[in-house]
Image 1 (cartoon, protein in one colour):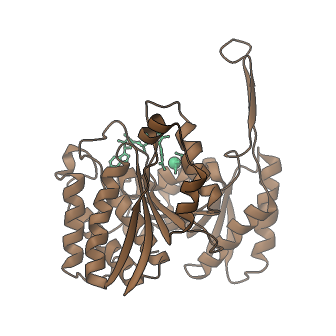
Image 2: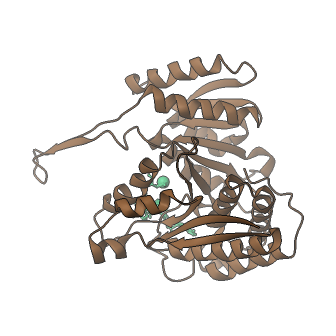
Image 3: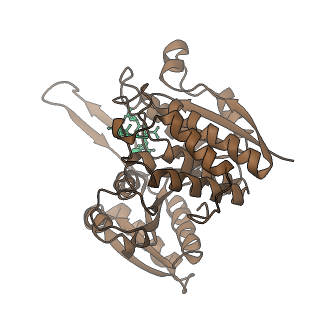
Length: 362
Ligand code: NAD
Ligand code: IPM
Ligand code: MN
């Protein structure tokens, strides 16, 4: 049978809870679709850091490099200075494993309550392609006189033709398989250096894809368009920081942060891709079974699609959508079921073999 090597990084806070639920769903998918996984638990995050002083060792990177895919929960803890775990683990992994693209679908499933009044599933089906390796995430910076009223901090931003081109080219290829439209989202009216590079690359690539339409929207206006008229978008390509911000907004359209999925894609095949919900470790609800595991389950669907298990991917997506549509609320006590129970519910819908139809795993 088909065997996939899968590393599992639960991480901090609700990360391990939603990941555990996703693995329950994976068990059901394996039973129904006849493949298996060799799973390796990789303990990264606040506990490991506090116990060992390690963020991400070379040995861990090598272990991860040998996998077919990685499932990731979330990282970040109130007990650790912000940035240490985030930069030292998540961002370090995305860089080390050359995960150039952060693919973040924004899809509202039928029957799922969205806070955006009047929004319907037909109007909400887009994909945000977030450049995943540079921008202000790697620009470096400098601080002088910290903690005094003379403090000055600078924070740079790196933008290379190479990485921007890779993201934009990916977006156009994706659009060819979808509705044929790419929108660049940036802030070219203020960030004129990086903005011009992105716009130049956009025109350069667009010339090679005459069958794909393209346009441009400033990131501030994007925050208005996304909730009001998401049907305006098919594939949105954007820089690392803008992509981070607008995908939390995208998550809201889908019903909330608990629902949104993502894939950190190595598109060269040189290292495994890594799949994680868009949300973080949610310390405010951690340890109480209050987290919605749908984002983790839908990230599993993206993972299965990348492993060539397309039928399983579609079934996981569909089962997750079915269970979501039955919930009275998408997070907290009002959800009426715990994180683990929801994992079991998705697994049981999947096991019953409901016809995949709500999605195709992309
Ligand atoms: P967050 O996404 O963890 O939480 C924001 C809000 O959404 C909280 O009120 C939380 O309870 C709610 N929420 C999140 N996921 C949910 C789910 N599955 N079900 C129901 N409600 C959910 O963002 P934050 O509070 O800004 O950050 C908390 C920590 O997580 C920080 O340390 C941050 O750096 C880290 N973080 C990590 C990742 C990641 O691992 N990829 C992503 C974002 C934030
Ligand atoms: C995300 C997160 C991360 C990011 C943080 C935790 C480093 O917010 O995956 O969206 O900014 O990329
Ligand atoms: Mn984020």
